[in-house]
Image (cartoon, rainbow, N blue to C red; front, side, top):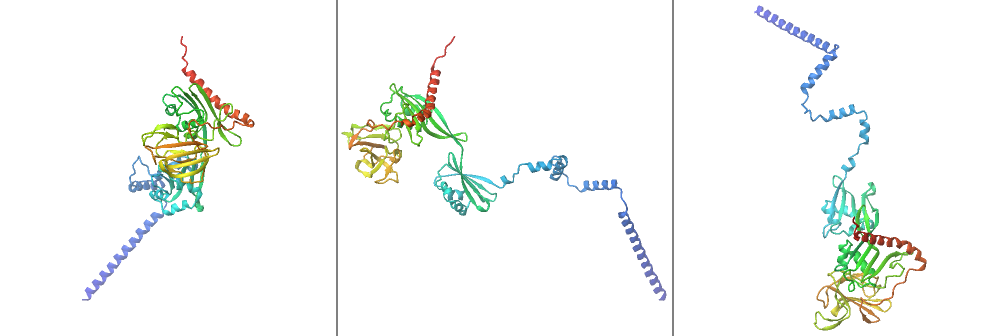
Length: 468
């Protein structure tokens, strides 16, 4: 028994020494590793090891698509001016922070419906409305017009742009803490003179359109010479006209026509000329080259130049089918055509009257009276006692009362007597005052020269060229 105990004790001691030996060996190995780490290394060997590690762990990158970091690093290292170039390059931040939405106005639209369709709130509408008078044009939107909305990327309102007129725009912009600010932008415009001419083939209206003359200029031409030439009775094929008129241009685009500046009309061999002149006091009129006025206190035609459907005098009544005196002139025109006051005056009657239907009667200075019948409607501002200016719209063509079709029945009374409005003799307006004579000649001579140049060019184009 004692021998077995001794053997067990010797075995324990042996095991202990083995463990101590292993521990010492481990510590020695650790010391060698630490020494290896702390010892100086070969730089070339280190780079080789690093490159090998990099090759092993790096993800593959296609050669045609270099990594962004590599591209940026290459740009910075190859271009010494790269930092300067980056500062002067265009900054897309502003454009990226604003987008434009163009809205087309539809029938029945108002600012609220337009904004709602654009995804904007009622609060946005209120902010614009609160601008007051500067934003007033947005209250009268018309179908077909456009509004441009400037928005942030998250759809917040930054501004509104709206073209009020061909040469005028409304711009609303958000200005920091000040909120929305409205401003009017006047676009630069210019007036250009245009010369046109033609020969009457069937009618003045059609011949003028064939010559490229706008319809509005034809109306003005008829008004200017209205008391010299009866365009609805006296114009014949072969008559000729020449006209100089103004066009308005904005940013290289023609946006409309202005006034007839000069005109010439040859009727049955007799030539008439008209020149537009504005006195130093601001009074504008049309005059002959000698200074005589072409104007009267009345327009010859109270509707746009049209056709006569029934003349003054005896006629077969279209409804009652018997001969009856027709105490006016009927101008055929589509329903809704504007009717203009033939002269300045006062409304003595407006309403419904027997066969006239809707009618307006005007009293004018000098014991003149005009009557306008069969109207479809009136100018809403007019009532008995209202005053009107010559040329002002007083109502619209219709066929109320005893009428077989839309037309204006127009009467002209002189001292209570029915008179043919197309042949009534009226006193001429005063000629150019002598004190303005020199200014008149200076302003109108270039217009006469323009018409003369047009005539010379026309003659040259019609002259056969000599041949050898």
